[in-house]
Image (cartoon, rainbow, N blue to C red; front, side):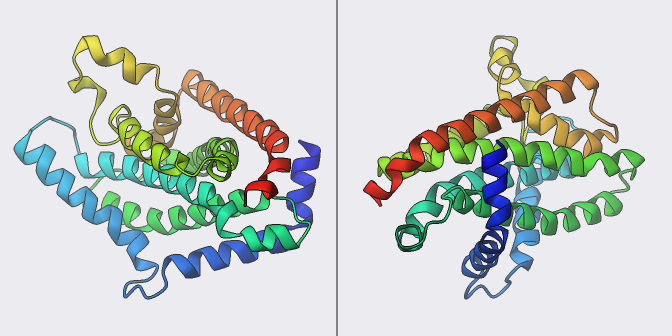
Length: 258
């Protein structure tokens, strides 16, 4: 761990430049630019609000806030995973020419996702005020929730990014898996609507724990219960440690496949 963080700190300027480049490339030739980071979840929230509140009609108080909080977390997690998996191949020439720690590239991809998440918090706060949802002191806990989500995502990105180099079709498989995983995570629906026989699928979904810690300060206006917080933090630390160890073991083979 000391070597991992030391390498990232030593090459922090490279990481920041990669983040800047990632953001420029992502919004190149985009009419709305960074504004799309804020408008895209709002547009999705509006569609889901019409579909689930008016057509399918399940009862969630202030559903726009509920679903927007879930979407912000999920967009950060899923998009960061895919970008981190693509980061090694997209920087193949730089990796082959310079003796830089390869972990910088997936970590930088996830850092750019964090910046997008920070921009997306702005419309969330606007929706909170527009719908009259109480702005409680627990919102101050949100940076801790984001840190736990980021730690979990970095670990998952480090686990998966070498596989995207070793096997060409892994990114496509992970995209399909993430779509399935979204429906097994209460991002757009409450757990209360699930039949009893399917509850275990969601209850034992590790992503759910991270999502609840992220959503509690926003929607429920409370600091997550200590039991939920301990599970989420423990999962994040475990996945992060596994990601660091796995990446260190496999990174030596990356140059052979780029």
